[in-house]
Image (cartoon, rainbow, N blue to C red):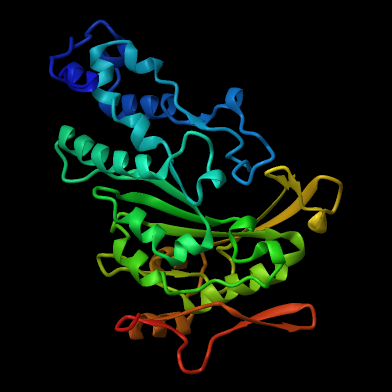
Length: 336
């Protein structure tokens, strides 16, 4: 069986290209910046997704694409850039049932493929590991709670600098019945253990309907006050309890999925208004540089190894307050 094309191309020496200004005048550091710009991925709007789906959304209205014509110019360019399309492209995975992910994505195929490719690139580059720029997981709540994110993060050789978990409106438990939002904490311990030392920050995007804004904000407040993520190297990531480092965004999308129109939540015909709160977990030092403040309660929970769920909602006027049981109804590091 013939070796893969990239192995055959890399097995031969490249012409030094002394007549090319790119190689004769520019140092490797400048070439790297040029190559990075040319090989960064973008939305392929010529292949846009069906808008009446739960995976079509801002920045994901179409699959991501990298223009790789640069790699075909000569062997010298190829030797310096062959791995960049993979390193630079956001690794996006859907921890969902199949009809909630874009066509062409298959978790049972894509994650094992990632597991094979990462060590191969590291070996070719002569490195113990390679770091990818970002990893983004869209996940249904039941998959998060059953360890889906931890399973993904345990992929051999996976070292993302930036990690994002998005919980969409249709990913919450019993969203169809309009139940109050809740976020369990039992998954955090295993996900933390699987988190690479390379991960500088972990963003959790909480999306729901605009009319559920107070519930989303209450969960975000609870997370910032109580949650922490202890990376595999022992470094603890916290959220900013002051809210300065939080990000709020909104968008309007379709009210139809799988030929069913959710008129209950429409503000105008065929449209739903979404509210997204992004809570970022990072080292205390990194948060401090941005003006953020770490909760004393979160620090205490980290010291004691306690993870508390945002799950018991009670209405107080128009607000939702999320409570935790006084006996530590959550998960400690010695328990489940």
